[in-house]
Image 1 (tube, rainbow, N blue to C red):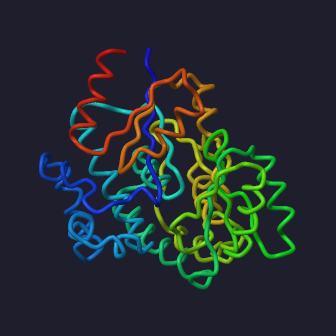
Image 2 (image 1 turned 90 degrees about the horizontal axis):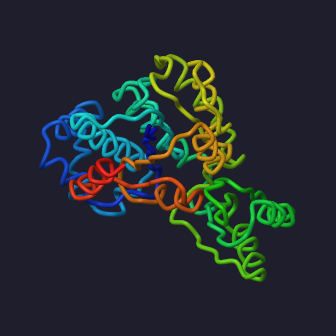
Length: 311
């Protein structure tokens, strides 16, 4: 029997126009965008559909925008009778996964991620920190290079995405040195278009702010299996989930381990719900034995439905 996982993307997957085809085709998707506009008090939907790329890249806009788009697509899937047995989300996408699992309501998630975005953007001076992807080295090799460069300033592995792809986070000058050393070892490196060192200890000062932000947000026990980023573990206790969301901003994303846990538990059909296909690509590198597909518009949804019929 098929066991389905909904995966939700994080920051970096956004693009102008995401979710617009669903908005025009499905009333339930329109309702989600309308609710986001009402909750936030401004026309987020207009920024998503017709805004400028630079505006959408502002973290305090990006985070509610991706959450809203993912939830609009989720609403369409549910209306079509497509449901998940488990869920996980990458970084920001963890909030989408928690809404999917019934832990958080959409309104509270929107308000939290808007503030989370502001906090993450403003903790480190703009331009001084960032992130870079290293392709072609093992996690141990990347960790060793970071250790070598620590005398220059802080840097650490931040996202363990899939075999051969590790993202590092820290001060920009140190990132550049780690990347130089990685290229000497025949790796490929890519500086990411983010303006802060997400998921690194440089964001530890956010612990208190995130604790206060989440302190009174109602959380329920998950209705389906939920795997978190910080521990790559199945969390059920609402207070454990709350604490993991606090830690999440300054601790690494253990994505590969989270997916391996789901595979071990027998999940075999992975649907990326939201803009882009980044997580689908990771999944195919983690395991070639499962089906992974993304849904971001009616065409990709139709393809996914055909795959479900063939299983």
